[in-house]
Length: 415
Image (cartoon, rainbow, N blue to C red; front, side, top):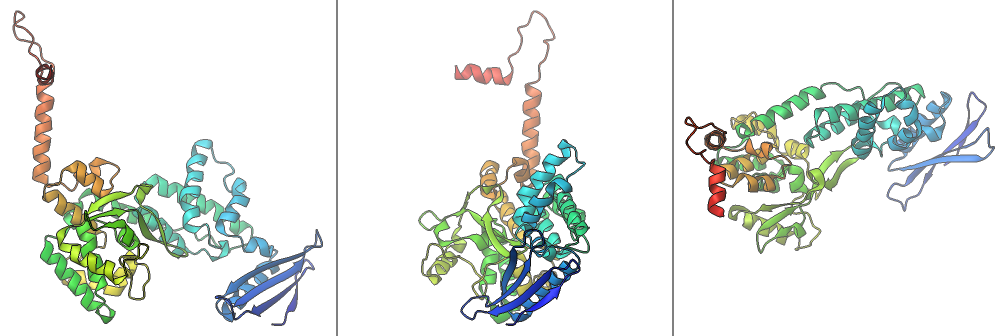
């Protein structure tokens, strides 16, 4: 396509063009060329797009920024690139005790979630989804706050540089999301389904409400509940992760939403864990493995078009909110399937230390919330008695020998 020169206020001419390359997956390459006024060298910036309209929109945006004095190269920085270039300005004035957690949030959460996105393409919605992902990954409140704070500072610098008009990182409402998540952790048993019949009824109704009655939606729901797994972990399950001899699933990865689409990453804490596959779902698992030709890298569960599954995809495809409300479980969310599995295992008598390994909890206190209140009370009573019996006491009569504590008594038996 032909090019046209654009004269900028500083006297630099930028020439743009769109080249059609039909043999490429993204066949329209948009390109800008200009002479650097300092080095006199020709500089270029290009990017490929699926449609000519997208290519033209990219050119128009860069030309608009260039008219405002923004270098086209700077205008196309990814967030990670831009953050590296302006970080000293973004963190100026911060004390070291604040700087360290801010930078940790930048490198461990902001860059993995948003770093590959062009600075000018970051929106409130993308930031909202990133923050929600941090919360569901069970990051602490201070961790989320620090990660968001450094993102706000970097994007504020982009506003000062004229790359964007307003700061999209100034989002609100995430504290309410975090509070809801904390409330859920405080009483996870209240979010569990009561029994197997209810789970099957839910799965059947979700399938019935989906387009073309896609049966895999029901299978995903039953599999998640019976393994106490997150929907993202179910989506990340590959055939090679399933041991059909011992009927154990090794959970190694999860599918999570990111600004660029769904992506696979390690489980929380990057800790693989073993989960039993109960008899009720083994036939279904065998059928899924056979359906993908026993290919080790094949996903056990996919969407109707073969894509990865996310909790939002499951919700929208099955009209989840309407279905659970009609069944009388308005509180039920996709993560409640995990609560269901852990609650059932706890009620079935699975020891708490084993339940902790199946759940992948870092702290056993989290696992103990799934124990039945009666069982927890009994265990607490036993602990109280042990504490009482081992408390030091002074004999009432000095001529009597000191009484040995239960621990001393047990030690004597062992000797």
